[in-house]
Length: 336
Image 1: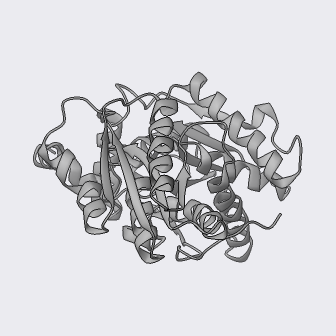
Image 2: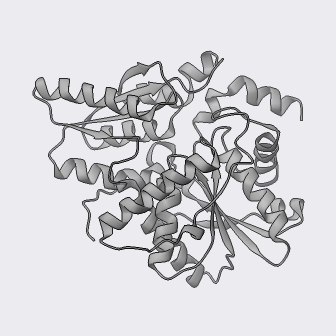
């Protein structure tokens, strides 16, 4: 299929070895796909996804884009940046998903960048109701239409075409090309599974191209059973978008929620260890919300799969969110 697309990301992103981290864990060889280096607004996986959402928005003549997400949402931050780059107005809705947060969480990191990019910020008191959050966006959109604007809503909930997943179908092609040209051994891929479009798109893209590489999704927002329904929905949506069927088998969808606890947006011992190891052994930055937990999963998996194998960790970005957790990170660094 051919879908409208705009250019937002610096592609291809490199695949790098992590030799010191690999030596430290004593298991499989670790590689990292640097999608934290996609360029737009400090980078991240959402740049690939937004190329298709903004392509669709511009094809529809939209002049305004609306999106919802957590207070420290990387998706929201990159949407605000893309809207600024393309000359569009942006309304962002920040949901209360994390309890007992301080000033840094509410004012620094991604929130600071949302303001810098000129986004109009709305607050939403509910944190775990995608349907209600989307409904509020739709109400804003209707108000904008009544005022003569042409808004485009990037919905968070299920039941909408997963256009962002098309970006990771393209990323799958990119990874396979790098594997071939750089003669890389890759035995499986580890990725954070949150909104699910990165996970679903990558898996779908690999299977479309005949690759049976395992993709393991590390749950960072929902438990395994709930996230499974989300990935299945995105896969069905990709079937519809690409006019295909049965590209992904049920057994292809692998999810691990061992590193989610205690909840979304709250770190744990495994994620804190992964954050410190990445920084002090490789100079690699991961954030407490998504990438520290998914890296913790990758490190654990590398010890399970064993020596002689190679694990590719997909780094989805999230660097600005680190500053939203400044007190916690400062304490962690000082005590270790």
